[in-house]
Length: 167
Image (tube, rainbow, N blue to C red; front, side, top):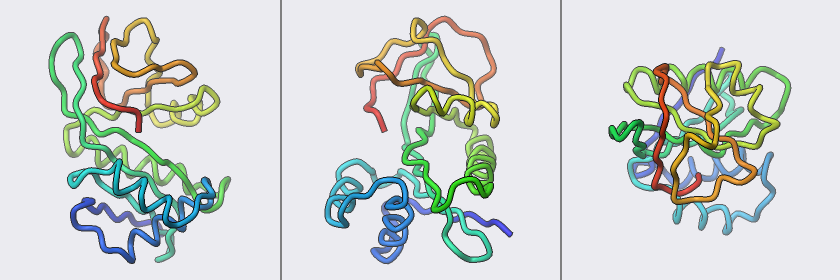
């Protein structure tokens, strides 16, 4: 049975950070001090740590970055999805993670924003994430080699503006 913990960064305990780093280390093998430093420099107080548990065991993680984007000049609150990882691949944990996070994004009436490599577009598309053509994006960052995907926004648009950083 799956369950999910949603924890604001401002409320995270050090022991939970260690749990998160253990999950992340299955995808990115960086030393503890480097991972802690990255988290402390890139995760803001109202960003959310999402830990997926299966039968009480941590099996997957991602973080939600509290951000905004403009679609046709209108500001929209969004959650940027980053650091998606599972302890073990191919067991359905990534599917459960994305389904539960999508429910949360919808419940919060937010748009989901995700940056990924092209090879992951099919995975996220299975969960109703939409790949946005680069010619529709105005951004302060370089998206070369990076796909931009949205969730929970069905309207057709010509321009999406994003002034934040990659996550």
